[in-house]
Image 1 (spheres, rainbow, N blue to C red):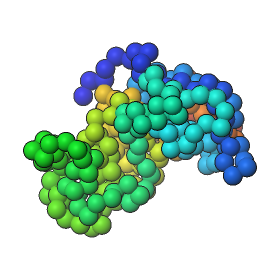
Image 2: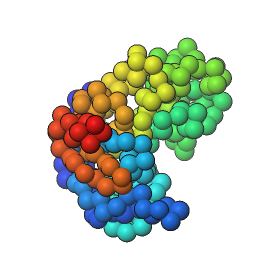
Image 3: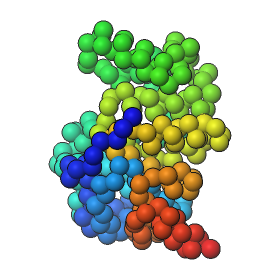
Image 4: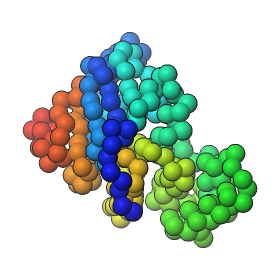
Amino acid sequence: MEKVATTALRSIVTERVSVDLDGRTVLDDVTLDLAAPTIAVIGANGSGKSTFARLLNGLVSPSSGRVSVHGKDTVRDRTAVRRGVGFVFANPDAQILMPTPAEDLALSLRGRPRVEIARRVAETLDAHGLAGHADAPASTLSGGQKQMLALASVLITEPDLIVADEPTTLLDLRNARRIGDLLLAQAAQVVLVTHDLDLAARCDMAVLFDDGRMVDTGPPAQVIAEYRRRSA
């Protein structure tokens, strides 16, 4: 799928954002303007990556500062932001809510005409290699199939922004590559939180977090090199 041109309305903007959770500052004074089609977010465990990701769809609110996603404030316009942002978790079991893949995809389209839901669910299952498992218990799917279902349940809503928080962490190399390829091929803007530096290197830009602060941003090769330097 060909990526659409970046515009100002596809920017993620944070203005001096800090987040305090349980009396601890987990993000401190983060200012960013991200308009690249695919953005890798990297850093050590506990560096603030996942908290940053959750800011983008309103799962976490800033303690100070402001977050804007494609022109919408994540606090003031929280409902509209959540409609336009699809979030993929590292563990698909936290995201699959219905007994079967077909039912889970249909849940993402609730409120639409039944004929449209049936058609789009069938098309999505086929497109992602899940047609043969449409009515099987989701619990019987392999790890790769579960993550594909979790991602498909986001893609079927056609979000403007996809935020994926370590979506390949629990997968073997083949399935990790498949999920990564699919994410990087989307027309939507993609923010990819990952420890997979090979995957990060394939993005258009990268952001590095360290101890709750954004410490570098730019071309992935530059940012990955800085991460390696700090981790030495």
